[in-house]
Image 1 (cartoon, helix red, strand yellow):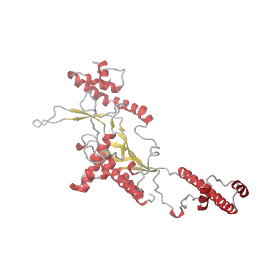
Image 2 (cartoon, one colour; image 1 turned 180 degrees about the vertical axis):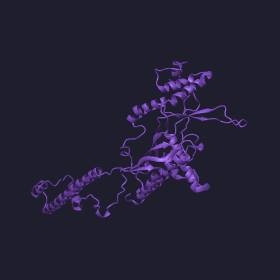
Image 3 (tube, one colour; image 1 turned 180 degrees about the horizontal axis):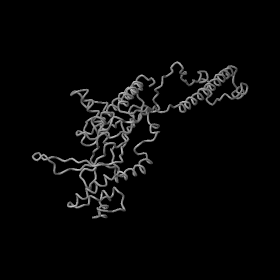
Image 4 (cartoon, one colour; image 1 turned 90 degrees about the vertical axis):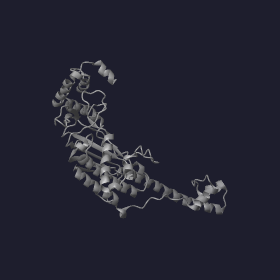
Length: 404
């Protein structure tokens, strides 16, 4: 289909107003070699005039916002296990963002990566995952020195999953971290002009599409400790607390120090320290102080009395509804059997009463737990420093089971 599009509009790259703006940009790739500079200049003109930005903004408003692709809904944690959390914030680029698109035909050789459906510049979830893993790895290497080895680090493995080249039993282990895409609504052009070593001047400038400085984006990370379901709660809390601190430190390093995208070693892909967002912890996390002194006695299901059990072994169909004389006449029972029936009936009725009370209290307790389910813990932050500080307090609360 993609090749049919270029075939249908062959030699019409200079003007096709019936198509949307991005399709017109794609048609620029049809320019002949002798006309390539003219086509590139037309792209520069559209970029400088903001025509592409207008297209991206319309796409974002009409497609992304209704579908909630970039930003998950407020109930994203409801179906997830306890101790899951979401970190979401809006960041602003301090340096241009570069990446490599998979577009086959384009007027320049270095287009920024765009979503295949919405044609918006974006950071793919896989790119976020690789950049964060690299930042955490760099932090750990600085702390552990040359003795640290990623293959022996279980924390990185359960956060990001196993690497394909690892020869391990848990070869196909999935990580606890899940990333959402980040879409941008602006685009710009960067020029890299390699200089001749003898003349000291550049003659062949290279154009790169980029997301310009000052553009905002929304980053969303979801953490689900699915592999800790049914295991020791204390150990799970300690793991989640350690993961929370490690992830937030890695996010700060990725956005402000190491960068994300292409050419990060040259300073591209960095964000400002200001990042406004919030952290949400799953509703199953109880950060409030537990009132152990006021905790009610645990419900214990009443057991059938031994006298009743033995009586029912002899009379398995007995329901203890008959009066004493009626039961005697039905079974032609002796005086001794009448006494046994009377005792068993009294104990059985008391057992049934206790059993009904137990079931009623159990139902009320279950309904109360469902109704009193705590809202997810939420707290806002305005910078990466505040994010790491909040993570420290939350980690301490998880370990000590105290209120933040």
